[in-house]
Amino acid sequence: MSTLAHTMMTAARSADSGLASPGELDRYPYAEAPAVDRVGIPAWDGGDPELGRVGRRAAGSRGRGLHGQLVQQLGQMIVSGDLGADRPLVPEEIGQRFEVSRTVVRESLRVLEAKGLVSARPNVGTRVRPVSDWNLLDPDIIEWRAFGPQRDDQRRELSELRWTIEPLAARLAAGHGREDVQQRLADMVEIMGHAMAQGDALTFSRADSEFHSLLIQVAGNRMLEHLSGIVSAALQVSGSPVTGCDRPNETSLGHHGRICDALAAADGTAAEAAMRQLLTVHPEVERVVPAPREH
Image 1 (cartoon, rainbow, N blue to C red):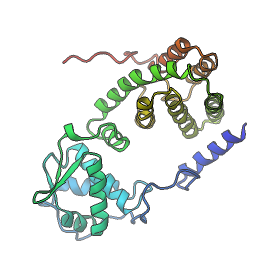
Image 2: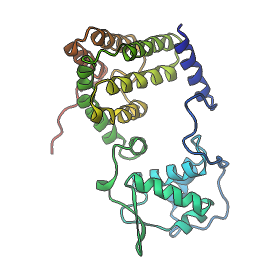
Image 3: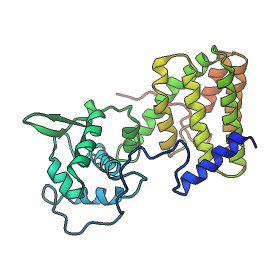
Image 4: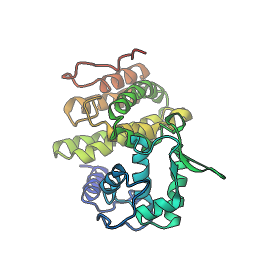
């Protein structure tokens, strides 16, 4: 096993056990709050039971601090529809309900505003924005939609988007003979092979995600490059047999290898074809390509 493969597999195991690994530092710097239900917290807007349910479910569920947990909780509630469009969000009430400081509430609302989920206006306050204003390409919103009531639509939309992005990226990447990136892609395939042999699905998934991100980045199209985060999010939240990347198997590994071979040969047509094969759903699934929707 290469040094790179060993390092990546070790890091994956550390992350899986809750330990921080190099390059995987917590995105939010605040200390994590204890994952316990609060007693005697005043009800928010008439004691909405859904608010309490979502808040308790999310608290402590991720390795994030108070700020990150609040972003997660409020984001999930907005995306799921528990906090509907034009719903006022009063910082004082949020702080009291979740027992966090004004600073944590303020910074959390700023994050949600940057994602298009809320808007803050003088003399109006902070309100939830309609779906048409959301940044649907934001990785957090992709995740929240993928695990909420819109999960089926989100996963279908991600699959269709990947079918648009990645075959083109593979074709373009074949015209950019960067040996360093090609070697890195080959390293990812090697890591995936070792991980599959050891039954290490987490390491396989991480190497797979980096493979696809690298491929888009080497395509030489800056606009496509900005979409690499979407592909990574899609791989993380697929949750159902949508593409050949969803489960470690020899077929998936072989398609990744053929993409590498096509890139090394500067064969854009072969690279595109191999990517389309990789993105084909598993044989037991009836629909083999994203079908046009009826309007």
